[in-house]
Image 1 (cartoon, rainbow, N blue to C red):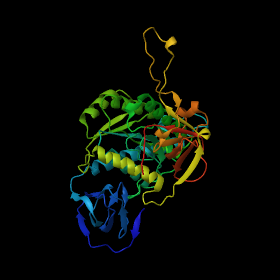
Image 2 (cartoon, one colour):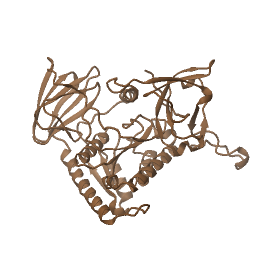
Image 3 (cartoon, rainbow, N blue to C red):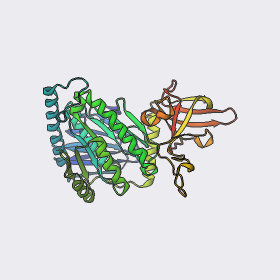
Image 4 (tube, rainbow, N blue to C red):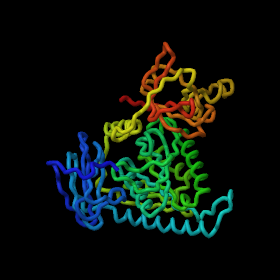
Length: 440
């Protein structure tokens, strides 16, 4: 938890008094940081209680809401673009959802203890905790609700799995990846979810329309790996999962949403701020046993984010991955020979030769084919996934160990320079390229 300890506040201190069941909504200015402390009462961010009389430091452009159940007095020190108190919030309905999920987790754990599955036996469905999927259009508050549900569960000693399918923002690692990580501690008010050996699959783009078949395959592979983990771990299985989704809920986006529900066996669908999507999902899933579709009000504090803000957010997340939120990491540059690495891309090349097609038919690109990428200057500034696979043909079935970005390609010496967040050899010489770029 980033903090300045008990440093004395500066001259720009503002006080906000929150009444029962109200919240302070804050957007930190781009020239931040901003400090905040709880002076009196109790309050929480993403379900985590704030320590009293302790200054927390928030980085530029961060957005957060401080909620209180019984009343609180807060101080802000620094510049914020927005800071106001709201008396109307949907928090009561959100915590009621948490209470229902809590009961389902308890029942699942009790069933797991009483049934005693033998090793290798398929677990009884009664031992499965809730698999919650948060759905809604862009800027409806999905990420915030996801963090709250995870935070409240962790405070009750559960270990839910956090699954992020939003490749546009990528809250677990980077944009362009789908990932999952167990959440065993409350969500840090400043740093967010503390990562614990995340399972990451690299899609390589910020929109699924580039290669929808690849997106489906990676979601299915992630779901399969999570099922294997759940089958062997009662604590994780009974805790269930909370799934954050993309904001694309129309057309192909809706089809991908249905595919994700099926692949991950989601049994609680929470729909935020979208009557149409709620109605469509309710009609589609009403005959599916054991699946509940619940409509929830989105928070009034949710603000629309334009394209420029989203690009800046992706830039900041990439920077944080390599350097840390507070520049506390020391990324390591390495130089490799072209012949010592393989750069590949998923999707491309014809599915079949013309001779194997009907007369007049044109070959189409294979969305799942792994094709080699020529190492040239086009790779400069590219963010590449480091596959665990030792064979290019197995890239689709393997998760990635992390990411590097290319800073230089020397065609004369046939050497490539990349930066990784830590020193040491890469776990594999297979690097996956997409369309992600990052310029420091």
